[in-house]
Figure (cartoon, rainbow, N blue to C red):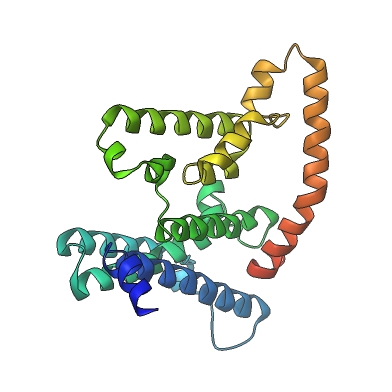
Length: 245
């Protein structure tokens, strides 16, 4: 265990990233627990509203991100300073992404169905950071050998092809697959070759004169949503709390 820790975390300089991930997840979990207690009227916690102005926790989150980010830039990647900066930054990200839906909609949708987007973005972010900790690098560059890595043409080609797959998946309305595919190229390839979502830019452009493809895309999207949306909604509600409207 000690050998694995040194080889995979300490030697590559990933300890700050691990600290940021742990503090990010813990801050999100604790914040959700506190907000649910406030919502239920239990415990000593209350909303902060000086002078009648409700202060959302995205505000201290932004402050922590700024402090942690600039501290990391000033202190380098080693020592106690980098670890403290990583913890502060992770805490800030946890607070900010917990209210991602509020930032996206510019409205207080925390306890609405739209508010579950915050839970989804937290899960995706945590998964991507965990992939980086596990050794994955964007666009599959990590799959190149030591000698090939110095061949700029091969690196550019690999990045370009994988970026194209992710971009096609995104235009086909498969945002999650596109984001994950940046780190796991096979996922982006899978999303790129599958039928587009019926309301995606790709479908509007290329299925406009192909009624069979458009109908097939609608049927496939309906079956996919019926199979997975209910499960995804239940998971989001368990983690973030059920919406009130």
